[in-house]
Image (cartoon, rainbow over all chains, first blue to last red; front, side, top):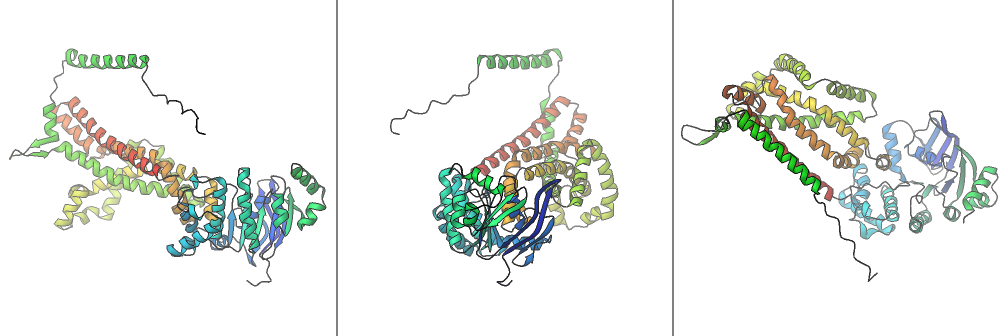
Length: 249
Length: 300
């Protein structure tokens, strides 16, 4: 655990669903405080990559190192990794039977054995940051999608993660809700959070990303700073993708 | 916004003329049956004979419960312990069936399939003679209970059964709960599997252990969904407790068989017994209905 380690390193990672190859020879390095945006057509394996990082999916080839420690099958190793990596899902996945506050305090109370009062303060602090502190007593079903997603971000932050993973966080939102969520993410990036974000929000990518990764058919096709990626994509596949996704903007 | 028209009036559920016709036919049918029984079969109803087996007057003239009521109490005790044991068995095996461990999954599956594919009567006969013939003597249950102090013996009689019949009662509870547990297991499994994958993933993503994921996230949601079928299964358990009468446990059905034989008032006996079962089961249904409503107001 020294500062020379990259935060995350993937070496030749591969993953198959039956005969279908979801990831093939994926190599990535992510430094501390680096913001990475992964884009690509649907089914290109971008979600699978970040789901392998906290082992919601198991990789079958290669190595994944988080802060220098390799991800193994050992349950304790996996749970430790998950506590250090926050994840935000496309469909929020808040716990509907718990109040907003309880959604946030569950992790710290159970995993970090934090006293209830302290967990509550922590939760309120992060709810403040995502600008919904006044709704702490509500239930997820009573909130809009945008609010729920901001709660989900706060829930992940409550575990004080070293790395945040965003899996298409705005894809399930009504258009008028998107900017509120993106604002929170931009702020988070400004605070120096290390993050990987799978998204189609190219405006956000241009503004925030240090590194753009373009994937297609389970492979990384292109890696580079956004200025290069958006202006001079080197591969035909990336050029095609960009022309399709940007044609309506 | 100000001058919008009010919402249209709601449609009220209402009986149609056809419904009234059907009611009429049903009532006519019932009157005909009563007429047949009364006039054609010439059956002399003797309710009081059987009522004496429900409550009787002792020497001082006070009303005391007679065998049918004590039989009902046995049924309730049997159902109470059977429900608790079946719920535990069902929860554990249901969890095993959703486990990632192949061994646990196979064992739980074997149990469920074995029980669901054997008629309850056959299961009870085989199992009862195995349990009471082999296991109970091996454990020395009867000696243990008989050696109890008078105070604890009184407690045992209140909560379970007469001391001399304790191992018999225990065997009945085990049979009943093993049998119903298989069905509860299926309900629990279906409930757990009905919770969407995203809930598991979100709970795991914050680093919860499998135990905590189940306890804090999955089961509280699953229990709301499975409460109606679970309530149905518990009520079924009360009714199914009648089959242990076949292994001489003196619950309501067993006692009723004897009363019907001694009094020869077969109809009266079984109608009263049917009413007693109905009263218990319907009260349970109302209770569960209330619980369900209460849980739903706990918001989603």
